[in-house]
Length: 155
Image 1 (tube, rainbow, N blue to C red):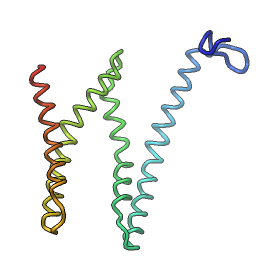
Image 2: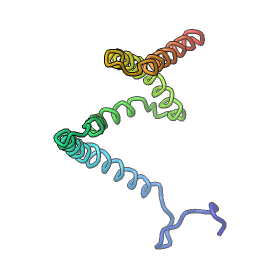
Image 3: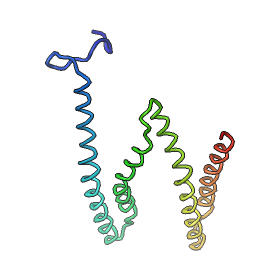
Image 4: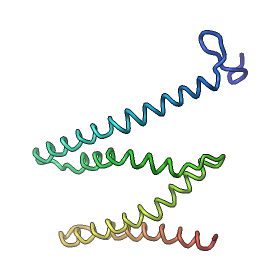
């Protein structure tokens, strides 16, 4: 049989039905929701907090572990946000990409610009290079502003 031609067959010789695929999908969705997101992510976040405390006690920077812990605690909210973006239509992929882009340009980039300015102020006060952070802040605000301009011109 040519690869990709014909029906898929199970090892027992029967065809794989859509009910079987639906069962696999349901099992996978339940596993991710109930095990990975609800139980495993908070435990790993707690481990990251413990690792951050141990890193700080050794004199190392705990920033990496703290950021990983915050990310792990935000996984459930991110899953809910992405589910709200899913329209369920034939254009669901483009709807999700459009919503993600709008979230990035409308929420994340302006906040990142503000953090870059705060970082630039701290670096200026400590006599360290601050212009790269100023440039990054301007770039983040520019992307957001240009996207708003494009939306206004199209709409």
